[in-house]
Length: 200
Image (cartoon, rainbow, N blue to C red; front, side):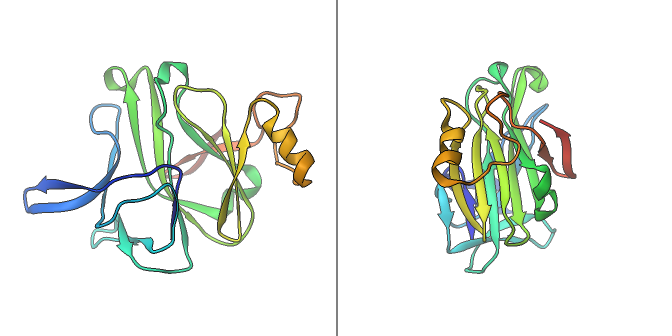
């Protein structure tokens, strides 16, 4: 099954060997990276229980019509103009070994992406542990927090207008790295194709 924070429509694309239906993530060009996923179905926002991520003969991810108990995430951080902030995805330090980045792409603004970038990731959830994700769309500064538990994705709230503190008060659930005193969450590391990079 695939969970996506946005919907993505398939489109027919011409290749030297013929036409196939694909879903494109990211952009092509200098300072940009396009990910092309062969797919015969659209991806809806939220959970898509009847499709999964498989591998092509060359080892690249593709969308397959198949039900399984694996959970994959497609996280797209495209929002607004990146001069106001880049699009990034972070995972809390305690969850670093619970996910695997399968593929990465990005879009950008400016020549060779020098103004700013937004990123898109295809991620495999490796177990049933609790995972905390912080997603910041480009063009903004406030992040959205997601909790994944037993391979179920739940939207917690946005880091603005006391949403996260109200969530903690109402549910008794503690969001790791969040304090009322600091604007940014602590100990969240940005995703990359090779693993986890610097703290956000």
